[in-house]
Length: 406
Picture 1 (cartoon, rainbow, N blue to C red):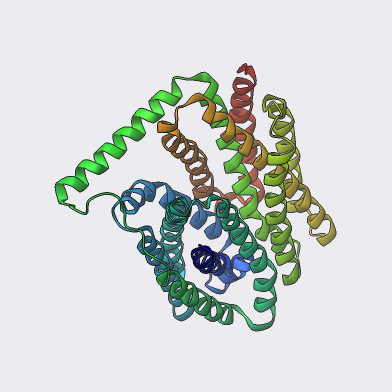
Picture 2 (picture 1 turned 90 degrees about the vertical axis):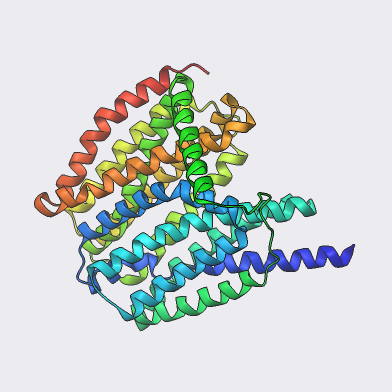
């Protein structure tokens, strides 16, 4: 018995290390500098991130189908190979369309990884009755992102983007080797796949998604919270994407880019702990209005940073926005926990798909609209339009959500 447990620990250790290495995105904390090297602007950064979320939305159902019909280990390997291809592509080729292709493929790779890693771990651990290892996965992913925030900026500052891409090539290659050495878990479905069955499965998934939206929309206790949370989440994504342009505007030293990224991800991680341990019994309705007010503060911070070039003031205001995003994330965690009360276990997957669809769609719309606005009118005017939209739609959804009685 002890040998089997040791073998389990060894396999899970390899799995966690592989995901940790995949999460060490060394270029991410200085991605704006990399864009600049490829003659891309802040406008392109916002637009490409919008495309990233759009591709994520469109690929959810096909990737979910793929995950149900091939082993999740194979899906993980495909995901990692795509990321390896992106890294090599960016290492040897430059330009607008090269970066755009990389972002599109990265969205596809991430959806595959998110879909496969939890599924593989659940299948593997359920068989061994060791579900407690699930928490380790989230730790390794968060730890990898935190390491990338500091190490990535250091490497960029001293060795440049090409060296970072070489290091990432090595890291992802090691992670691929680790994943290929893991035991394979075959899907339960019979592998009798035809063109007709593919079309039928896609149609069934799409019909289920439509019926889920219709069912959720009919319940006021759900739809108002979903839209309000989705709007806040999409604006948090907008704020996060704007961090690097705002730091560049204030002439931040490169090292501080990593510090701000580390603080941002650190507060996100802590907000999950706070929500789980201290706020789990809090009535979520009490956070609706305070969070609405905090978003006014966040927009004020952005407008102030655009108007000045002070490193100290910008750093302070960015820290304030990080705290606000942390509160928003805690609200989202409570919101998701609340949603499960209104559906049976058979519909929880569809419910989460709809909830994620709303926030990702709004994020894609907001970020992709930068193509129309940032170039002609500038970053400040673009945020002013976003602020007006928040006042109009945020106020309406906030009032509707607040009216819902628990």
